[in-house]
Image (tube, rainbow, N blue to C red; front, side, top):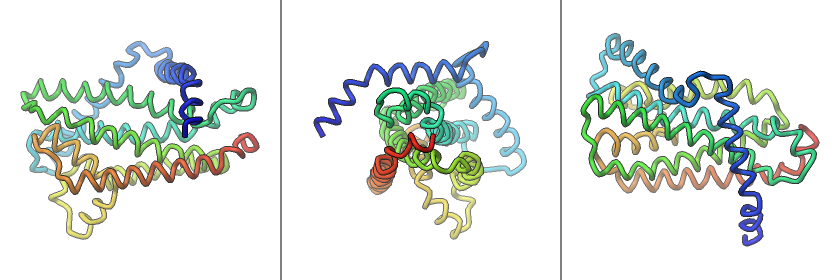
Length: 258
């Protein structure tokens, strides 16, 4: 374990450079730059609020905040895992030339996505202030579901990055998967409208529990219950361990398939 820690410290400056590069590439030649991370969720919130609140008449207090909070969580997961999926392939030329711990490329994509998450979170806070929503002290607990979300996404990203090196079709199929997953996550609809069988199905989605924990402390002024926290920790730890196992099991063959 000590050797892994020392190895990480050795390449820590490289990780910082990779993160900076990922952020710069994403907003290269963009006039507004990182501001798009604020504007995108805000624009989508306005559109979805107008459509769903008027057509479906969801009985949700401050529906704009409800949608935006869902977008903050789901968009991070979708964006981080999608970016992580191609991290090994896109850095193939560097991997072939010098030794670099390959997990750094996946980790850098997750961290750069987390920076975008912080910007989206800022947009959520601005909307809360604009709508005069109550900001309770419980908001500080939001770091718990966010940390779990980041680690869970890292586990998924490690699996995707390892599989995609061998099977490039995963890159095309994953966009279909995330679209389906969005409808199995209560981003735009309240759980109360779901029939019992569908409610149980949606609750099997790990993102659902994390999103509900996020909303509890952010917009509902409630502290999530211990059961939800334990389930989220178990799901996150399991996904992270699976990600590590799959990645390290396959990393020696990456150079043969890049």
